Length: 101
Image 1 (cartoon, rainbow, N blue to C red):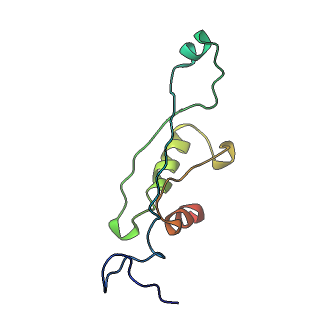
Image 2 (image 1 turned 180 degrees about the horizontal axis):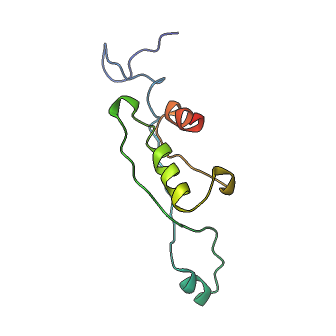
């Protein structure tokens, strides 16, 4: 089925190839283990490391793969050591591509 353009006649943006228009909110509190202990709080997770990666524009959206590989290698980990991964990408195709890698 062919979806009609969302914004202008003849346009290429459709409901099938773009993210939804949503409102949302979230909050995150980061602190050291020492500060959490001082406040009597039990940490829910640990930020151990981070990485940034650039990729060829022809494969845009695959950036989480090399950055994840970098963090895993630096810390002597594999994906089996990770409980949960969030890939915060706008399009499902990007997440599928990352998942396959």
